[in-house]
Length: 380
Image (cartoon, rainbow, N blue to C red; front, side, top):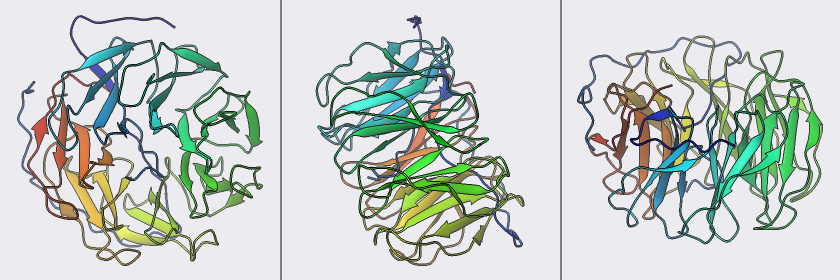
């Protein structure tokens, strides 16, 4: 691994993830409005079960954001106290070609996984909760997508990626907070990066765009155990899915439809089967990301067709949905979302000036601040 440090920070691919797909028989879509409040042109200086990429939460509750620099290295910035202000940017070195995935070990230590310049999976981890970092280590493999990390019921991390043959591969810790086994194949043929979530009973379930452009999924048959065969949830998918979990434990998957609007499909009961596709309207320019409000309501964020940040949310936990609303700004990346220690959602995205910007709820389950810059120069 090359360790290329830059004298000043130039953030590359903003490490932020989520989903896109197409729904069956898309209906009419209402495009979100226009003329958002633009971000300034120059820079200023839990949903733990859905594994938002690029942003993680330390054991003490402080958020930490990871991004790839234009030097190919991984850079990070973190809150100096829970629910509070931010440090400056710092480099973790390395040389990478993809978007990182961030997750907590069973003991709370953050661990980051990313596709290296050699197409292997590389990882780096905190040496103690809320603390410093190890050096980089390779988990091998030859992957053709970004890796995505989930956590088993017993606390062991498991990483999923598309292999060089187009099928899904995985690798897992042999014990919580510990070493790793070898890669194993789960079969299938796919064209995108996977999304992983935990069922109510702790079983991991993986969603991915198939070679037929349908949404496919595979799941553990028991917690911490083996896997089912692949099954299709239909649809005509144009990008990667994003999975969230309702307050009652039912999984729900969000995608962009062929009409450019947001579609979703959900389990009819926890750990159980699935309903049909339904449209949520809108016109979205990036994959969606999903977060959980403190009260359990799901909230979805997207870049709109007008490059503003738009969101839509459940009006009650496990229930129906609001209409679309704009949070303004001019963003040029997929957003990322996570919960502060006090439960407030916070969203991160690249602004029109290529810096990293963020916006946050002013109280849990409530309204939003204005945009603020965290600096950097982000490039896709």
